[in-house]
Length: 477
Image 1: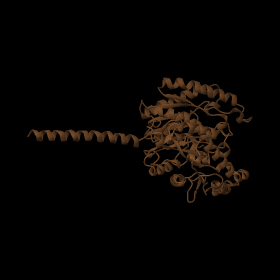
Image 2 (image 1 turned 30 degrees about the vertical axis):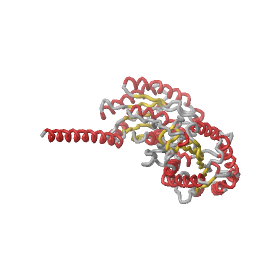
Image 3 (image 1 turned 90 degrees about the horizontal axis):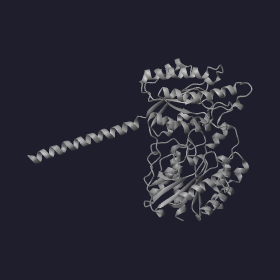
Image 4 (image 1 turned 135 degrees about the vertical axis):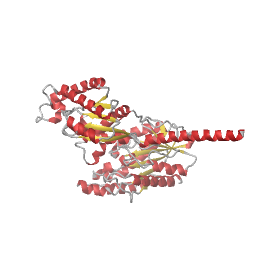
């Protein structure tokens, strides 16, 4: 009888524990599946004015969501020409949005045109009305982030816009006044004034180009994450194996090595024996993006390459040293170039922990526009290979280069500019004749992501496995 009671009690306890565990797991899963909704009410900079074609993905609003790793969902309510005196539009926006976890108000740039002396008081009055209306709609505890307007480039405004000095003064005054409003209204504040370098503004001196939006996201992502109450942490440090069991691979070149593919389900689940050398020069799980050259870095070929190499070497841990930088010519990668030096510094730091087993290279798009550069590509690349091996003391460490995508032909037709990508591909093909222990990987059958420049994610996965096959053949010799 006592045994029966004990068994029943034990079963009840077990069921209770399982029920609690199930609740915790469901709660965790739900949190990941339901990102915070961030509504951004702004002007033309929020809307992405002046961003066209391949620059469009640089839009800071899009980047915030992408780089949040599923923690944030951004809703773009930007509109060109919008001042703070847009309360009716603001009210209509509130009615459109059923759920708001954080409201971002990024206005003031257009108010700065008002040189009557009322720019700042009018903007503050309008913003206060917006804050009140938003909290009447979504509750008094609604988090709100006020964003101070960006700087301009006065010299670009030209003689047709003689109020450049007054406009700049107003922008400074608005940025000085917003923090006090944020404090009294229990909002967060972040300023974008001074974030944009002159080179990051388009010809109109007001709107940022792709590089300018890259600068904005570096400020806005942490500010939005903080205001929304989410943590977007770096990957945890990794435990390292013995040096002889840590096989390192240097990844160099331009954007197709850095990766511009859309992050898929595999991106956040790296192979358990694959690590990456981070921007901070430490080892972490190889969660994509591996590279950090630009905020639009995405899926690349390095991940599938490393997974294939790890499977072929079950006793080893694979370490990737990402050094590629988008939009760069070969001249910056040869000895004496800034990117050569940067890659050497990172490689030498990483080599304190492991042994270099190979170098991966994909570049050439940056040398396609000049026939002379295209026809001398192989000779210059072979010189770089020799310099890398010599400086790293790596002997004839395997070097694998990939060919450029055939879709560049369509880009040539679209742009109407001559491209010598076929010559560059022939030059790449000749590399093994100029430098020992080198291999070339074909890009046949691989597709672009729609821009006729960058490989899409499925193609990058295939490309990486092709690199791994070529690398293993070199290593077996």
